[in-house]
Image 1: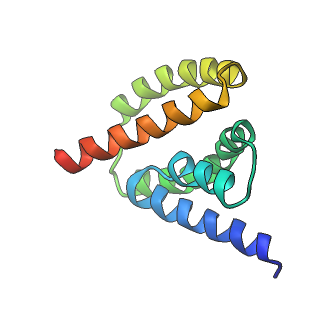
Image 2: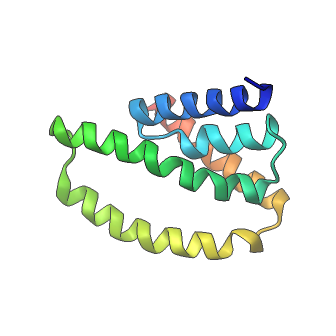
Image 3: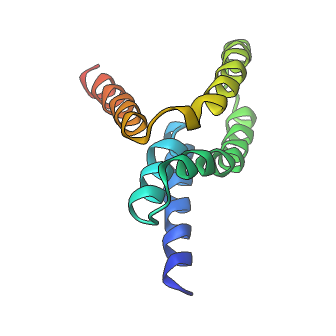
Length: 119
């Protein structure tokens, strides 16, 4: 198997594992990996992460639903807001300069990590 295929499958495996364990992995793993390992442009990495996340999330959702782990009412309300937010975010992605996109993305990840660690 060529080196890039192996790298891409390894990125996918890591993202899938984290998605299954923590409900996260697409953005936190795929975006930086595509940018720094695969040398994809930031905008393309962010946009590419979305279709990667979809099948990972579908598998996780099925397993969590079958095991009665999802509070449906809460999930539906967050999904409504998420649909609106994702539409707005997708429309504005290319309007944010890369240097700010990286700072915003990195700050969100760091803030979230600190909240989880210090909680």
